[in-house]
Amino acid sequence: MSMGPEQDGFEQLRKLLALKRHEQPPPRYFDDFSLQVIVRIKAGEGDRSFELYAWLQRFWAALDTRPALAGAFGAAVCALLIGGVIYSESATPATVATWPQGRSSSDLAVDTANRPLLSTIEEVSLASSTNATIPQPLGDSLFGSIPMPSVTPAALTIPLGN
Amino acid sequence: MIMAEAARRKTSKSLEEPAGASGPAASPEPAAEPAPIEEMELVRRARKGDLGAYDELVRRYQERIYATVYHMTSNHEDANDLAQEAFIKAFQALKSFKGGSSFYTWIYRIAVNKTINFLKQRKNKTQMSLDDLDFNAEHDPDLVALISDKTPRRDASLAELQEKLNAAMQKLSEPHRLVVTLHDVQGLSHEEIAKIMECNIGTVRSRLFYARQQLQGYLSDYLK
Image (cartoon, rainbow over all chains, first blue to last red; front, side, top):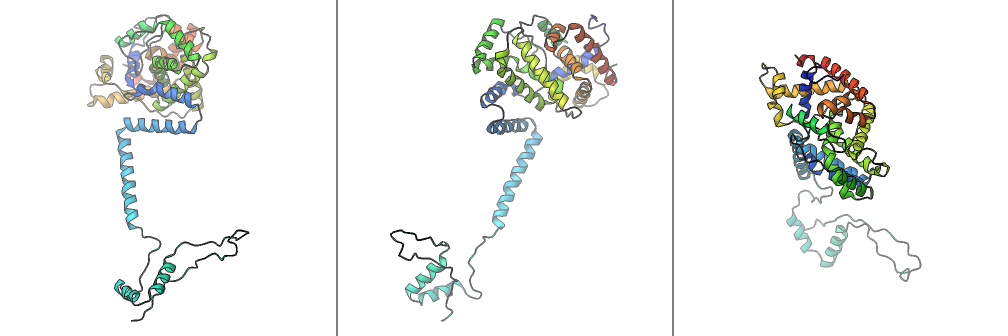
């Protein structure tokens, strides 16, 4: 079993195995290898934040070394961004005030001008209030006897006269 | 085979002088080897919790440890995880390191055991994720001679050869793959391998012989 390398009949195989010496990890892979080990030692195994950090490290390394993956990731991010912009533009707000059909905003201005100021303010304030109020138990407070104001939802009523 | 010879010359030194085994990231030029006393000093400091000293130890052996694990798994991501975990485990177990062997042998042993356990668990679920070949691969005369002249694209041919070679390696049992990796790829001596695997030299030699025979059969199309 102490044959020399040339005599044992495996010289060709050894040359082929030499190919494995040319297999290299990604460039700069070892630059922060020891740092990662130290970080893991400090963080301790099983630490969630570390796991996320390690995952991000691996993901970044994968992007760094695989242009196809980096391209796909970039395309996915762009698609997501464009999709988000399109969606936000096409979506309508849930509550939009609608004018009565056949009436323009100038009609409303005329109506408002012809009405007493106070009633207009009351109507507007009632109509524009969107804050629901929850009646609070009065208890024994100093102001217990004072009735607390409450707002009830009111429909926008605009007189159709004139 | 200059690289292999250089590696062999280096690794034939005693274990107290850590060998510069060739591997994925090994340099063909002999690197300045650390003095054993300095290494023991680093170990002593690391044992007291000095992470700076341990960082230096990791830097010294990261390439060789990674290479060993990579050649065993044929998977970069697995090799990355296992190599890191080996160093973490070694740090945690530093207090139990008595100095009976060199730190180099000891860390190698941890990495190898961890890798073999991992491979046993993932049995039959081999998924290769191979490292790229370096620039010198296509200029290696031995490799060029192995590639068919009829192949129009040398890159493709080398990549195919790399894949076949790794697939053949994965067919070997873990102990046989380990011996081939340590000896024929990384250039460690039989004595060093025996210390790492905690077996006698005769076992190393017989495993190496058997593993080569197996590989020769698997790769007969590429060996004329």
